[in-house]
Length: 395
Image 1 (spheres, rainbow, N blue to C red):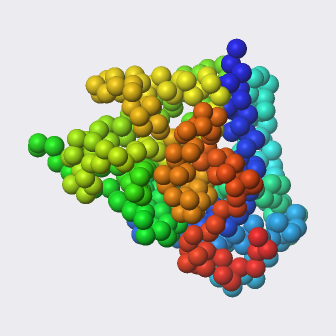
Image 2: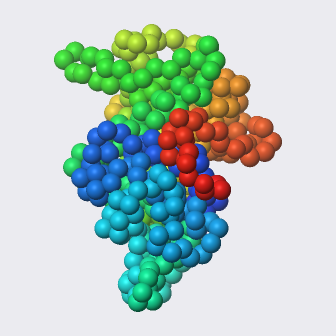
């Protein structure tokens, strides 16, 4: 009965291995997201190493394991930019490593023999390095190098999320990243990029959309969310309450975006005058792909959005007049460059004019338009240089 829920959890189990293989664009993205002054201070206080040191050590290890299954403990000391302090077993390596005996005991306890047989959490995600000892010297094994890559990029979030003020700081960093991405991607003189702007309604202070990207005919009103789906949503089929909760949170964010767009249409934005001829497209940007697809899930989201709009006194007609999109950061990175070539209005108008493509992801639609899968362009060469130069990785 829950076939569409099953397809969602299959997508979360499988698609990441194709979408998030070790690559420079993703490494650069997470480096920029974490490498702020405030988050770096949190990292140093907790682990004794900087964000840059974690990424360079992780990349050095990854480069080694992409070409060999086992390395000696002193192997990555050969990398000039990886210092002794970075590879101290009390810092980064200890964070992502267990002995074979320790890991075997953990994995045995995690094994499930029910509907989550293929979906249960596996601690190789947290400890992708396995320490082997012969009594004289230690070696390291990395069964799945992709898990190592995920650990020091997206996985670093889970080490820091419980730290005081991290959630707020990381949310700000995600929002800034989207703006920086737009500035670097859009080179057209006809495209305007507006950051979040404060406006006042009576005695109440309010904020505009996080970003507004517009050309002469259409505008993207973008809301950025760093929160991720719960693990139970990605893996559970018997209890759909976690899924319902996450859908409600997504719908709430979309409804909030419609509310601030309503203030724009009433002329309350001080940085953008209302233009009745400007087509508006709300876009909710999520850090990772939600993999929400299929009629059951999409209709649940729509119904939840309609409910939230009704609570705010807004009509369902907004969904037709201003159709919303849910877009992952990966999709945004590829699509912005294509929008720069064809224009915001051309991209969005054609996408939503065809019922078949209206529910597609930005990335799928971009690939459809150009007839092939479009490789993502690294739009932050300076950040790439910071972490990659000096490391002979062969990526």
